[in-house]
Length: 113
Length: 121
Image (cartoon, rainbow over all chains, first blue to last red; front, side):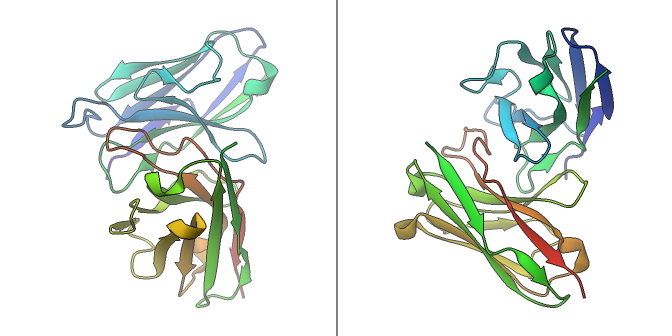
């Protein structure tokens, strides 16, 4: 199974400042169809997860453009250009290239300093 | 609005059984693969099972294969998870989630609130 490792596990950020989360895969996430099925999800306390970004860098409809995804192969990054209060919670990367199973990173907790 | 609403969770003893249901609305249910993802208390996300649009293929994480059965009823826009021989480590919130529509789609663009399953004696 593909293992996804996120860093950092916790990220205290000042409001308005940028934040960055890394996700490293144990294997290349490039699928035989040419796509890379790496997604980012956000979970606020007491809420279900919400898909933010799919296929590395595509924002779901309604996701603010302060969120951006990048990367290739085995290394991926989620960036928030200026953190807002509503961005707190846990961020997960997830791979859907090698299925089954789908696998998730262990999560990165974003909190306000 | 797309909506997924789970039910059926509760407290069960080790070795017991439980059946979860997920009622879908606001989209064409039969066009999507559907899945279950769980989250143990204070822990991360773990995919549990998925089922193809017509129910012809089912996929499971190793830890539940042989104990859990995923199924669906497209006429009722409903997804199910039959959980047998439950273990303490199955304790989690179980989320119903919309999986892929096409082979090159990305999964889990919509999630239910979840239903809590507690396995304890």
